[in-house]
Length: 481
Image (cartoon, rainbow, N blue to C red):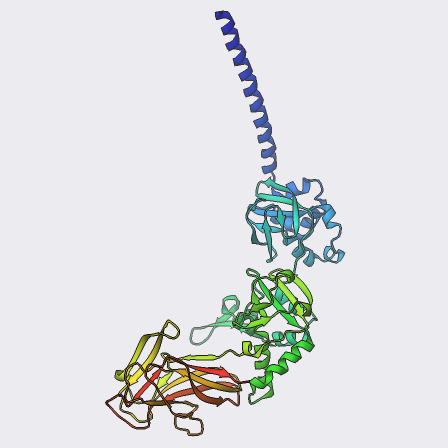
């Protein structure tokens, strides 16, 4: 029995030793493979990978072979030879275009396949979406191949270098009138941080070569939405000339000015500012209404979409009709009573109260301004309303008298001047505890401009009894088309 047990123990030790030797051999083999892969840089490994000969040639032709052979970490999504067989020869023969194309498949840092969906910056300045086992619209057929300075994946199709929304507009002939307006907003800006200093003036300030520091900017991109920005995603609507003209003619009466040129610029701005949107909406994802960055509801009638184009930062849709609703384009103008521009010249701050009240009609708190016993005839509170379109407006206010049942004072709304009978609306009695809007009459703005509004108090002076009072929650101007 003892001998048999010793034989079993010895046999077990032999088996264990053999298993350990086999495992070590497999681990050594694994390490040998891994070590061989990471001993080389990305270009060396890509150039040795079967099926990537064309992409390897393009790396050399564009100088990217040296870039991805450097010490920085990169991820390369390499289209296989079958995918590159359909690449436009015009790109291959143009070094600049080819460099943009190749750079569209390389990013800084390491990105393993199977990760979360995200947009990643490419070396050509564009962004592509990665996630799971895809690179944009391509499938990753061989994933997570290692090199000394990063990772590369083999993909089954190439991803073109797309224009962004702004670049597409500039290169497109789909919307000449809209394009002309957009480009008319270009201007030159001097940036001292990139200019070459040529000397110092008599005051000791630097003198620059203005040509070296001049960059082109665009008012529309700055004032509305920068659809030239690659980091974020947008949707841009381009209107063909017939549709642009129709909507332009619909809007132009509301932008009467002293010159044809200024009317044209204002009308074009108000038309185009509501044709850019945050977020990328492909044709299939478009709702029936989009909300522009200026808060205007824009109807999207899909049968009116002539064409849709993917861009590097979203989508462009060319439309034959965008039938704006005027009530959406020109929403009511609200002027908050507690934010006046100024008062009559005589100081009555001691008689002025900024309040927070509860409105039982709306079930909301509100802020207002109340002046009492200020002892001044025809006192006024002034409000500046900017960029008012040339049209008629029905005027309303909410003016809450919750301080006295008697006397009930009167106040009125005036435009442009505090002492012009021609522009003053009639006096209105401020009822006790009326929390509803009160109709004041109609104002006619004949030209697009900034407008001064005045809330006028009683015509006689009094220092007691609440006879001299003014109160304003808000003023509302509703377009009367």
